[in-house]
Image (cartoon, rainbow, N blue to C red; front, side):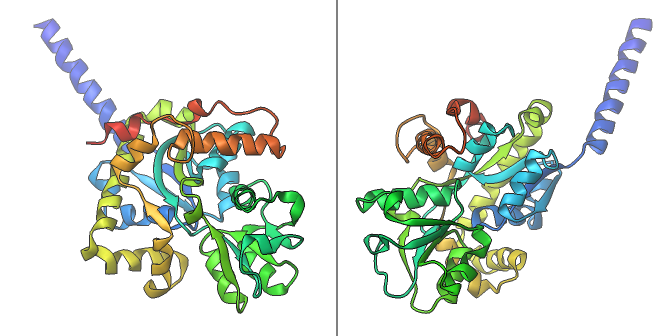
Length: 326
């Protein structure tokens, strides 16, 4: 009888502990910024997908670079960044693991040239505004290579991406490299300008990911699994044409645009299904694989002295979360 009573007491105590930990667990903090594949996290919040899976998430809105700074400073458990910038964070001390691929850029990242410049070859000898050391820089290098040129054939002007539109409109440069919405704003701000190269010309060069601090994964892996499951509810929701009107209202509200203004941004962002992500999570060379894409930019960053030693890419990617989603 005493043994039975002890067992019952232990079970009751464990239930109390579990109940308390559930109630007092801090929300998982995700730093995100203005990119369609990340603004889509607002859908998970607004449609109750986090609640559906039993996880509490706090979405922290930043400018892109500021989101990385916040993560590096320990103010967020996770950050939404392009795969190459995940590698940079790992190289510079802000350890993280990519547990989810949201999308790949399919035209939203652009080289926008002023009126009279019709293609990349026409940029020879010209000034190009770009945030040096970031993936826009890597996109520019790829564009130049595709046209038989190198950085030595142009003059790079270091420029914060969020200032792309005003820099191009000022006439201080002949072209800029930026992602949406900044690339679209540059097109509008400079009359006669055009996109002479985009990520649609190099699909897979930029994957957009959710990167989590290893310590947070260690402590709350089950909760991060729920976040990934909630994400695929977002993907399914966005894929249903019946949800388009409501979806655009949610996305546009976050960035202060009308639904009609926001709609074009989605065409340059390829939202990946779970099956497509699983294919990208198979190790391989080239841009079809997240591993291959990361290795390409890894070597780019070493060559451009962003950091000295290559990162072990395999340690920065964990495909198990997507594989576990039913």
